[in-house]
Image 1: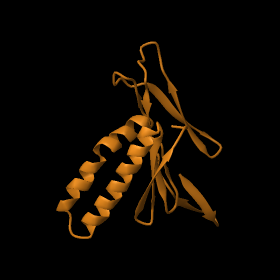
Image 2: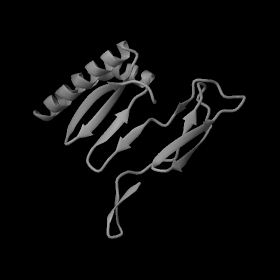
Image 3: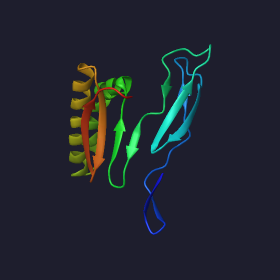
Length: 140
């Protein structure tokens, strides 16, 4: 994706990989992207052999400076259950970096646990070197 910043100059603000989708058995499911105005829409086309649920591309947004990753309920649960491992492993990092990683991992894990308990999902916004975990409902 690019943004016209004037005088015919375009600034690349993100790239989109090829779409993918898999059914509950891990088989590929037909999928494609379509640009609808300023929105990129993914369409998944199950067939008679498709077993649900179907997992498709995770949602990820990125601007010029910040980005946000959106996790579905299953991914939120995995972060909630395993996020503390990152904080525990940060002891091996250099001083300063270990505190940075462990504090962000702890905040993300706590938010994922709260989101999972409330049957919501985790999102993580990245801005200026800081990870800001939040919960959200719907959409993905």
